[in-house]
Image 1 (tube, rainbow, N blue to C red):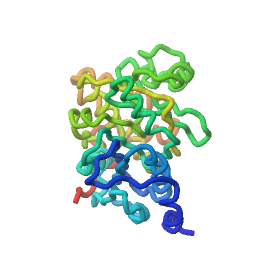
Image 2: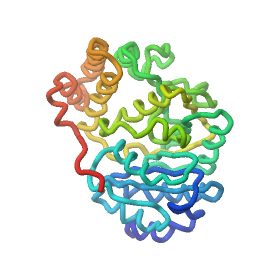
Image 3: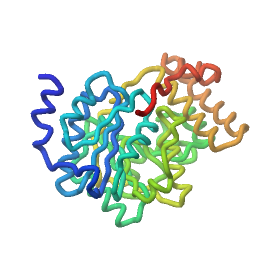
Image 4: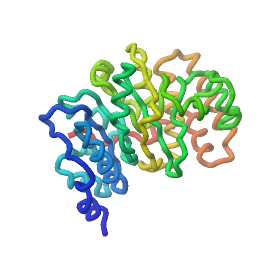
Length: 325
C-alpha cells in the first residue's frame, strides 16, 4: 500500500472536519512541509481528533517537496494546502502560510513530524486563558515516551562557554552556564514562564502574532524560533510552558546532514550578530569555535568548525531556493 492509498483510507475517519477559509476559527494551524510524506497524514489525523472540540483551520505550506507530500495533503479537501514553488525555508514558509490565517483567535505552528496527543490544543488554549500568555509551548515526547528537553534560555556568551566546556554533562550547573534547561522534575513537570523553546510546536495568541509580525526569513532554518521568541518578549508578552499539552515528535523529519548541522551552528552566531555589537559577537563566535574544536574528533563537528572559522564559506551553506507563488 502506498502512502497516498493509506491516507485515502483513514484521513477522514478519526475526527471532525476543519473549518474553511471563510469561517471563524479558534485556532489556525500552520504546518510547513518539506519531503514530509511519511509524517503529514498522521499529524493531520491527530488534529482531526482535536477538531471535535476546537474549531481548527489547517494550513500547509509545502516547500517544493519531491516525495508526494502535497498530493497527500490534497486528499484532505478541508486542508488549505499550497506549494511555495521552492525550498524557501522554514521562516518564509510560515510567513507564506500566515497569508491564509483568516479570522482566527490563535495561531498554532507545528512541525510536520509531530503527532498531537488528545486534548493538547485545548490545554494550550486554556493556558492562554488562565495566564494571558502571549505564547504557549507544550511538552514534547520522544518516540520512546521520554520527555524531550525542549526548553531553552536566551543565548549569552557565558552560556555558550558553559555549553562548549560541559555539553550535556553537569546538568545541574547554574543557568548562566547553560542555554538548555535540563531539570526535568521541576522544569518539565509544572507549568511556568520560560524564555524560549524549540520551535516544533507553539501556540501564539492572534493579537501577539499580528503585533510581532512575520518570522525573520534571513534564517533559512534554525535560530528563527529563538529570534521570534525574543521579539515576543521584547513586545512585553510572556511565554509559558504547559506540560498538560503533549505532542510526540519523531525528530529529524526534515532530514539531517552535516551541512544542516553546520548551518545550525553558524545561525547561532548570526542570531547574536543581529542583536549585539561586533565585540560581543566576536567573543561569542570564539566560544562557538571552542565548542566545535573540543568535539572536532567527530566529522560533523569538524565540518561545522571549518564553516565557523571561515566566514567566506557561509555562502555555501543551505539557503532558500525559489519564491512563493
